[in-house]
Amino acid sequence: MNLLEVQSVCKTYGSGEAAVEALKNVSFTVPKGEFVAVVGESGSGKSTLLNMIGALDVPTSGRVLIDGRDTFSMKDEQRTIFRRRNIGFIFQAFHLVPELTVEQNIIFPVLLDYQKPNRTYVEELLDVLNLRERRHHLPGQLSGGQQQRVAIGRALIMRPMLILADEPTGNLDTKNSSEVIALLKQASKRYEQTILMITHNRAIASAADRVLQVSDGVLTDLGRCVE
Image (cartoon, rainbow, N blue to C red):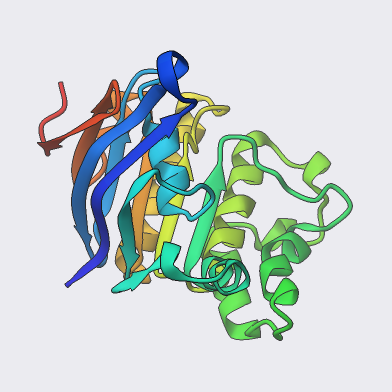
């Protein structure tokens, strides 16, 4: 079953002679539980694509279906709730709340949704992410790799169907990058989550199940072969 369906998505910024086609008739599907990397140079359109899939921006034309639901047919409030409950975001900049501890940052999305955290699941995530000993630390007391693991925990806490990672290793050294990618692969398998990761690093992309390439707004499926 396809969890994600991108159907003929186009995105144009501006109009007339100033128009820029960021995405050109992009279509692809991602089955549930697959870990997909999207590679491309800066300005290729890959981040625009991620914003469309995450319902953070509206396509000029085309549709995005997540678990069979058209995100852009929803009203704004409905789409916001759907995004909060079904899509986890991991960014290059960790975007942690500096005044909150590791544990508080992880459970923050649950509290925003007016729910109570599942304590068993919280403890499991702290173990999986190797953060149990850091649970009461503030972000400023953590290394970059530890901060990114907190960001991954925050993305996982709502048990989203889809995780979107935008250059998640961009601010990390080689060792921490490898650990973060290993954690994403583990999450994909352990929690049956579908992951779409944007990266310019083809070595990082090669860890995914499948690789897509975006160049000048055009998407090509590279399969497993990344040189």
